[in-house]
Image: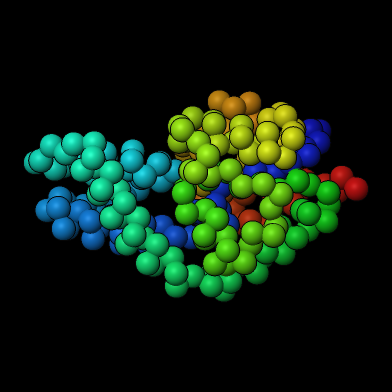
Length: 217
């Protein structure tokens, strides 16, 4: 790799931790209560999408029309269900490989940040004891537009005082890869996102990111 990066911005869910099943259970509970059909195939459409946009996807199958106030209440109810599952998370929910890789990146001189659309980002990081790994956290509490808009990544780069061109984005969702590309970042895909032809680099395991980021110091 000819390019020397200075910062690395990580998506949270599906990259550092895995709470997809909690999201599914929470959305499923809400949908069942509202009498709306919901399954894992529909859930796949929600990857990397904001809470309100996810709700709109679920409500596509509803026979009822909801007001904006009712939608806000539904989204909050889902989030309460989701957070009840998150309280069960512990440091054991982060792979040792992930933790060691983050430590090595810091030792190599990289500025690490989070770029996640989730409003629960800080809570999750605290639950799994990862907060101290990151210089900055950009999440759903400080953005107006969710991925594939690049806002969350652009703010993360601003927080660590680096230009997008000097940062590498790590994502597991197509929407995240698109957001990174639209923001002027280079992207590295893991998980489902490895099927995205727009990703600049691809890895099968988290630790492989070290192959693209040699020591800066």
